[in-house]
Image (cartoon, rainbow, N blue to C red; front, side, top):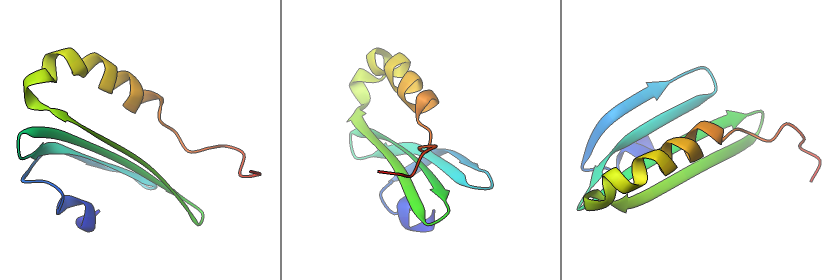
Length: 77
């Protein structure tokens, strides 16, 4: 998680659980949202970056994407 924090100018939200973490905040004129799961030896990473001026327009979409982002249950690719 610490390595991901370096992508932010300011972290405004942080959540850490057993096998995942979320960071959200600002980088330059953008909002950055990172959600990462670590399951067994696999890392699942969601990275969303969008302009701050479009925050209102993007909030619903970002919430939907982030809420549905989960690690794959079947690792037989």
